[in-house]
Length: 198
Image (cartoon, rainbow, N blue to C red; front, side, top):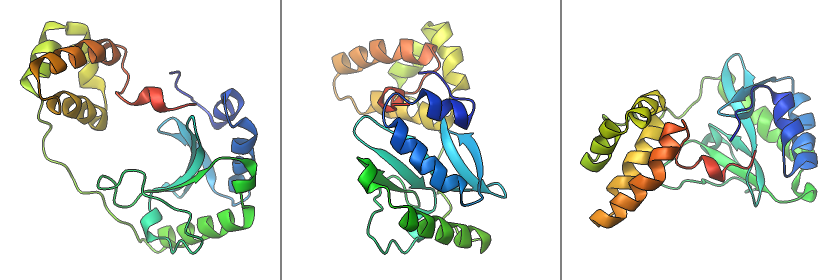
């Protein structure tokens, strides 16, 4: 997956949902927020605070609010995409142009901005030290390229790989998973990068 460096490049190179993403962009730019790239997708910020992001997947495109759990969500459009994992973040999934409601989007963004200005936020809980399964630790020490690349990954991506190996019950399953992920690690990618569409 190619990393996007600018919002213009993101919208221009979108393989799916290009028109819908552009419509969302037009609405969000009209709010006066700063447009940036964060985590590979367009993000709209105010004084360095993350207000709302745009991203696309194979079956839907969405807005996501890092502090969405604080929003009133009067239209009941927000979901927690990772129940039990994320406390604050919420997604607003859409599947066609009819799902884009400019007035409602602006109202949600306005509320998110007001919360940010008031300093309201749900702070993430810090996780303990990363614990690598022995099998992964051994594989990374044998594969120097993958080992060096693993050190450069974000803590979140490192945890995903560690959990992927730790969750396997049988040694044969762990071995198959290691064979699958070592090239991905060596390439500098995350375990779930392939699920991102843009």
